[in-house]
Length: 255
Image 1 (cartoon, rainbow, N blue to C red):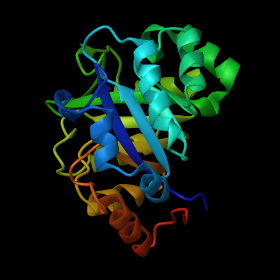
Image 2: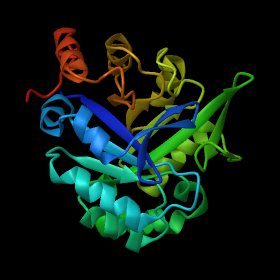
Image 3: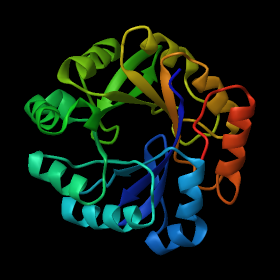
Image 4: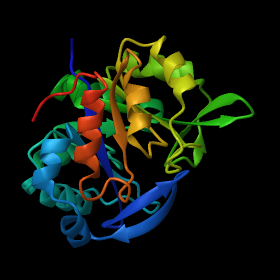
């Protein structure tokens, strides 16, 4: 049986780390703040992967983002996935050369499918994570891109199929309604999505305590859960969550 993964996500905007609630951003601090509050050697022993996303609402500067990724990866000895503002194969190459192991793509799956194919051909499907953001609006799943600001005229089921057809290795699924609330993830939607794809799912949006993680990881097709809750999991929070998940019977790697 494949072991499931615990992922920690960091959100970057204008070279500052931010918190997100329903995709509205709140500045937290710079890289020095992160280093002061998070021991990346310890994080390497408590999570299986780190995701770093450029969520800037302004024009995304890939070179500036690469510098952040480079500094983060220096003391981080776990797989690193990055995304946000990848417009061409050269941007992808820059991020991978800066320490990233995988790339997170969102808008490209709808508006630049040639780029998705090019990255898959050059670096392999396992390098691509398809980020799908959606809102529940009057009981209907509405897919969004551009940091939750632009509707896509496609159903969630079609978006999931599209991810597989274009060559993604995984799906990073985020419910905007739940994002940053800490009130639990959208379990019903994740279960439904898992029925329509062979791809492993990273469940995101709403995780605020360990019980939310356990609930999501018990879904067969959910390979990973991701939290970007900087404050809840400070100190020994991540370490304690990992131990509790393992004690529940879920198979995680032992570090």
